Every structure is written in structure tokens, then in C-alpha cells.
Image (cartoon, rainbow, N blue to C red):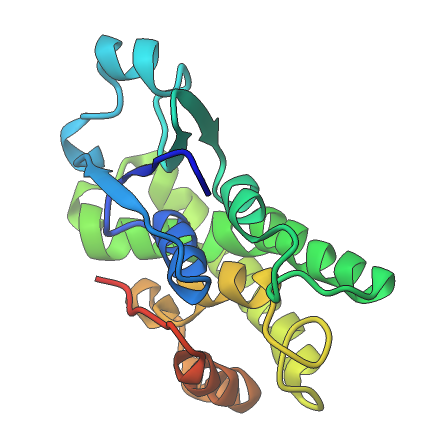
Length: 205
């Protein structure tokens, strides 16, 4: 890619990690600029004016253009590569699981990880505490759906790894940090062990 790529990120974020993992698997050079979301560094007027008006990361900067939303950034990097299936149905299956990740998986598993590991239960608001059980049940349901899907296949869509695997790996492999017992999901466990064997894999830091 001719334009310089810069990821505006907090390295603790799984959504940011998805983009770094996509770039690593495809050997795409990616610069990073880091922010501390716990200190509100993405909520400043400067960030909102220059990077993302919504005050959120990740944002993939492509030259002078800015692309928010993690899965959109992954798609930008991976379109036309081995991480996007050539078969039309398998490509749609990939998108199905990427939509699932953002709708059913990330809002529950990622949120509980953030609350438990980085915010701390003693610092949660009453509203957050009230949501914990609902999010835990929904997160368990999301993991159960993945477990059932992976019982008889190696990858989420098609016969090789795709963006669906990248998107779901990011928060699934650290779900225990949100209190989820991954030992209850052996097919997911085998898949988690499989992803790091991919050429170019880079771990979450």
C-alpha cells in the first residue's frame, strides 16, 4: 500500500489488536500512535477534531484519511488477500461472523473484560453492576454459539483462516480476564491454539 498507515490505538484494546493482527498476518507495515482511554485521551477536543469526532479508537489513518471501526479497518487491509474467501458463500459466512462479533460477542465479553481487569469492580457504577449478569449470560451464549460452530471445523468461515477468525480471536482468547471459563469450551480452546500457528502471527501486548 502506497500510503502510510497509522493505527490510533490503546494497546490494551482487542479492537485495536484485530487491526494489528490483520496487518501482521499480511506483512503490511503499520505505524501506531497510542492513547490511554482510561485517562480520557481520546475525548479531547483535539482528538475529536482531528481523528474521530466520536472520541473512540481504533482509527486507521490512511495517509490523510481516517477510518474508524475495527472491522472496517480490517476489511480495508485484507480485501483481495488470503484472509477474505474467494467463494461467495464463504465470504458471506465470514461477514456473518464479523457482524456476530460486533453485535453479540464484543459488547458482552469485551465489556466485562474492561470492567473487571481495567476499571475494577469497586469502581463500577450502579448501572454497570446491574448490567453485569445480563452481559455475562449473553457472553456465555456467544461462546456457546462459537463452540457449536467449531466442533467440526478448524476455522470460522471456509477451510482456512479469515477475517472472521481475526475478529473473534481478539477478545475470545482473553475472555478469562472478564471471568469467562474457557475450559468449558474445548473446541474454542483448540481454535485458540490454532490461530498463533498462522504465518505472521503477533500476540496481543
